[in-house]
Length: 583
Image (cartoon, rainbow, N blue to C red; front, side, top):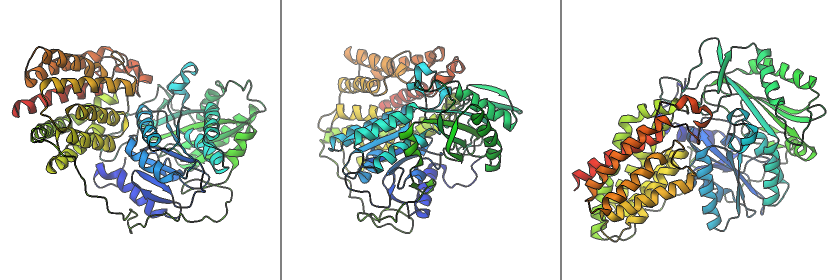
């Protein structure tokens, strides 16, 4: 378990602060993460990686020459927000465009995609690439749905080494695609991980058993087997990966491979070496030439007891990039010339933070009617934060049935931050639209992950519909909810029946629109729609998930409602109470 922490909610920020203070030779802090402390040649493509905290040395530990130019760092097991990614990428950009790279998780896909759109709007040419190497999370016919685990490293490194060679953005992207297509990973675990402040792990493994095909966010494995010896574990890992070769590799014999035996948090290095001796022998027996193997902790999952094996099948070009030198806090290879400091480096304090003073917040002008409505919005967000806090543990338990169990934690972080930001904006005299917009950004920033992106979208859609000039009536609120429903479906791609929050959001929006269309006052219309939402959430218990981290464990979720759907239903009912109080 994680023993040393202060406030669990501040763990990720404090860890990043300590990391930057310890590694100033390589990195400097910026809003949302870190960038290189050394100068990047003008015109070089900037490779910006990122993901949630809890995986060190991924992602911040991989920033430095020969590897990433920057890393956006989210909260524990939660993707960084689009605003964080945009901030890091802007700081890392050297004039050659930006390649955003991340593991293939729904929250990361959403936030990095939004960040790419914002960077493009700023005139920065941007491409994205999601690493999808975990063969246990989807079959070969659905390889695009696979999640990214320790295969992140060789794919990140290939792209970054190509960028160091001065290749243009499109060619760096093609290198990433080539490396990704030739990388496969598979893992096993003997116990789950425990997040800071939690009193139990995200999943457990029975004594004398192991979980097979686990994820790196505390997701349970796809199956269980008897606890193996080190040699038996090595054979399982190697044989499983050799069953699925890249399309252009017919036989492993005579092939070269970069090999990574990765410790997930609490398997000791000596144990890894015992396993690797057999991994090397088995690959040798299969005729595979091992190139620069890596054995150690490279992509972890807090204190999870487990290991994963990654093979990247090399051609001449990929081997050159894999062997290329790199110098980062956590990954070093070969030798590089002395580095030049970044002339634009911002001064930092002893604690490792930028000394720049943020500008005082300014809010747009608003009408008296909109400012009064902002008071109701603030009360509603307070009700949201309170109901989420009261049910956070329940939401986590529901999510842990087939997912990673962090939905309650993320929703608590997001709703609390949204209420705080809304209160600040309201105190400055903001109208309803601005209050919601500030709350949207805060929710997305602090929650991260899929729920952060989606709730940020919901609040922003509502804020746009309400605006700051007019008193919002029931029809306008219903219109905003309808727009939020469409925006969420457009962003995440989910539809009714996929076992997500969309299964509640769509019927809630439809019911609210119908009720306001009949002329019902907002509180009455919302009451009717909230009742619909509660029934819809309960109905998700009978569905199989088709999206998100629960998809590989679909059967386990039967009989349990979707956590995101359930939290949305709770929120709709809580907001109704606020509407009654401010009627």
